[in-house]
Amino acid sequence: MTSLGNGPETSGAASTGSAVPTIGVFDSGFGGLTVLRALVTRAPQAHYAFIGDTARLPYGSKSRRTIARYAAQSARFLVEEQRADYLVIACNTASALALDAIKEAVPASVSVIGVIEPGAEAARRASKTGDVLVIATDATVHSHAYAAACRAHGLRALEKACPLLVPLVEEGWIDHPVTAEVIRIYLDELLAEAAAAGLNPDVLVLGCTHYPLLKPVFRRMIPASMRIIDSAESAADKLVMHLSYDLGTPPPAALDDSVMKFFATDSVEKFERLGSRFLGRSVGKVELVDLGG
Amino acid sequence: MTSLGNGPETSGAASTGSAVPTIGVFDSGFGGLTVLRALVTRAPQAHYAFIGDTARLPYGSKSRRTIARYAAQSARFLVEEQRADYLVIACNTASALALDAIKEAVPASVSVIGVIEPGAEAARRASKTGDVLVIATDATVHSHAYAAACRAHGLRALEKACPLLVPLVEEGWIDHPVTAEVIRIYLDELLAEAAAAGLNPDVLVLGCTHYPLLKPVFRRMIPASMRIIDSAESAADKLVMHLSYDLGTPPPAALDDSVMKFFATDSVEKFERLGSRFLGRSVGKVELVDLGG
Image 1 (cartoon, rainbow over the protein chains, first blue to last red):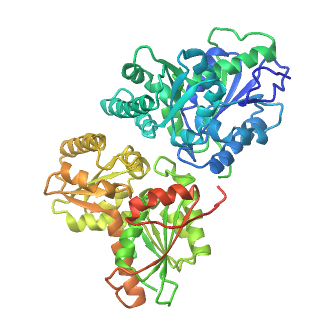
Image 2: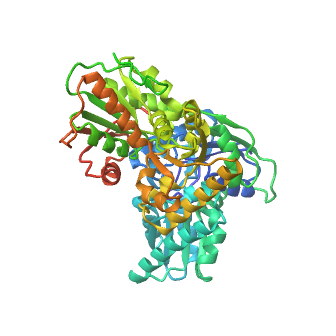
Image 3: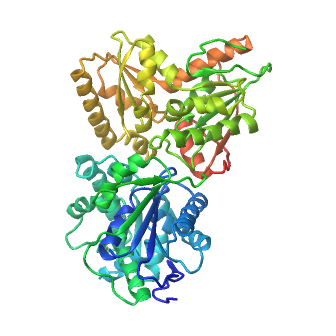
């Protein structure tokens, strides 16, 4: 049993005494592969099972009730079928709206880590002014999960939904003038709101797993003094802390040949094609799963 | 029984002898409300039941198998629960990929009309050169349903997926410089492809129910001689022909207080809020439906 970092986004403990834990990673689509990418770099010795609920994506525009139902089905698949010892909810929307539902859906022995709390913790470490900006999907912003997590760390957070960024990334317009213009419009609105609210933000939290692909564009658009927090990397850091504690040894630093299995609820061809963009290397074979939806 | 226009997109016949038929309208989301809007203008005396499968939208990025399963569930709901005599599949993606699955899911007495075939018929009437351009979602384009329907009418069709247009419409950026720029990029690519293929297109088919909201922008961007075909209006025209034939009387021309019921599989608040943009008037009350997905 572990008591490490048992904050609002962490529950359970590793059920395995084995040296090779299985880490289940869940996302509504491909974006969570940026979290998997960060995990594999940090914990190459682990086994990984990733499921993207691609038949029902995007979650970002859906209600809490629907998201909770979908996410719990994927979580059960990872634990019951893939024997995951840890679950990483690599989807900001599901972390914001369904973390409790996911914890209830799996045994208490499974550690469940979302991306919101690690993102807020990283923002606290990075911010000097105590004021942070958060950009995310509609559903994540309307849940105000980041604002609440930031407040618990003594930060003031201003959140903004940027619903066009996911489709732009999926269209492949990563380094594209239209994408730069959309980001400029969103950031201008956000910075104006921050100024009107008397905030002095020095951190920008990327609260959606698609956004790290746009990090170079954000970097060009924001003041040089502003830090960018990538929740994917923050969540990976947190899981590795858990692993080190549970296994009694730090994970090796070098990249290894991890065992990775990929599942999707729709079109494995599209997953294989687009997934590499997020994972940073070929996804390989993806297996189709029917969650009954 | 009717034999009117029993083409590849029409099946069955009206099961009602009543003067007030119920028309079931199905879409993956809100976009199909543009079809309902066109229907109500043409057949104000009918009763309408509209379902948007908003928990699982968008269909445009999903596979044939998944779309067919989802669409059949909604079709059965409209026929079994709402007693629809006619079904209008007001979703280009579902019309392109799931029309057969929908026809199999409901009794043969129910007339099923999609939007593809009426769009192709309207294109044939509008085109002098025989060459047409079709813009639609990823899934509709990859199905090549429009190309096949146009070919059956002696037309050559060049299709292009425009996946950013739906999110732009849903963001409310209807009359916005970014949207105009995205449309310009898509149209430039499409016109260049048409020229390279030796086509001389004089018709642009809007093969997605979100696109009619952008019609003024398209109008500014294309040559004045090019006609725009709105599949929503074409499908409504076709259904009214059916009604007139089945009921033995033409529908009255004046707009009346139609009986309209609205159902959604997710967030009725969002449906009520966004739906009016597509329907052109207030949607009123929307009922949440669980299709078991």
